[in-house]
Figure 1 (tube, rainbow, N blue to C red):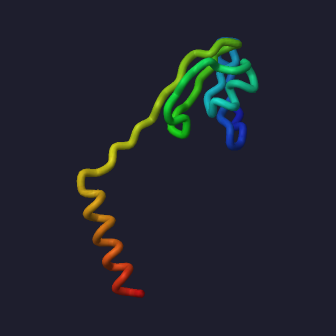
Figure 2: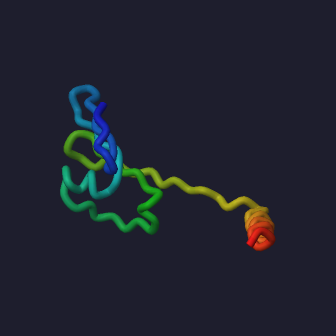
Length: 81
């Protein structure tokens, strides 16, 4: 396996090159991907051999009490200023 800094990883499995990483990295190898993805910052693209294999979208849910925590942190910061 080889890490391509800032782009992704490259490996060989069953004599096929596997690429996993940013869209730009996959497109450099395969050409333009005709996909419309809303948030590519949280998307991992995958190719196997010379074919696009798919993508995985990561999602992080905001905690139910996140707004309350932020409010309390802001109050504490103001107390120290």
